[in-house]
Amino acid sequence: MGLFNKGTGKEKLMEKQSKLGEQIRELQAKEMRIKNAMGHVETELEIDDSAGNRKRLDKLQGGLEKCQKDLEGANLEAQQVASELAQISAEQRTQEIASASQEYQESYFRNRKRLLMENELDKLKNRLWGKTNSVQPEALKRVVGLKYNEDLNPEHSSLFEAKQEAERKATEQADKEFNELMDKIKNFLEL
Image (cartoon, rainbow, N blue to C red):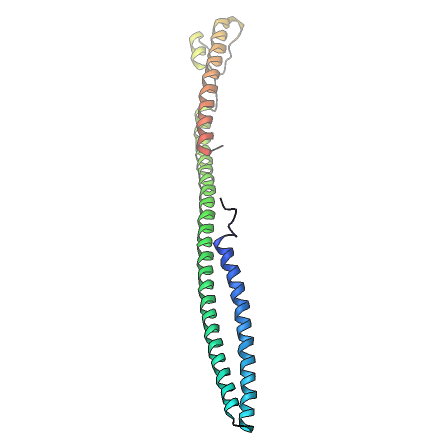
């Protein structure tokens, strides 16, 4: 359930690193105190070369060696913790890069599709302009013998009605096909 967990692995390692840093500082201070005490005892030995002073010096030397061994162990452990933290940070960085890369790829993908669509629409617009520049009911005009620049008039009412019906059907069909195409385009562009 996680009720008793104390943070993530990284947080635990950071806490351990902090405690080790404190321990190392304490051991370094202890080492200095022992060395100072040894200096005093060595001075006393110069004055009084007694067994008691030698025993004190040997005891301090043993304490110094133990302190240095503990300090070396704490430093090694601190290095291991720092290495583990660096590995976790590198893994997190790799995950962040992968996530950002995926986000960028998706954005770039949508933009690329948009650019492709814009370019193709520009091409189509130019091609369509040439095909549909002038819309005239030429076939209907030919039926009644009108020339290109002549318009239908009221005496051609059946042709005028046929023209309007053709425009209505063409409008319905074009609107339907255009809406279907736009749905596909929107789907393609993820809009």
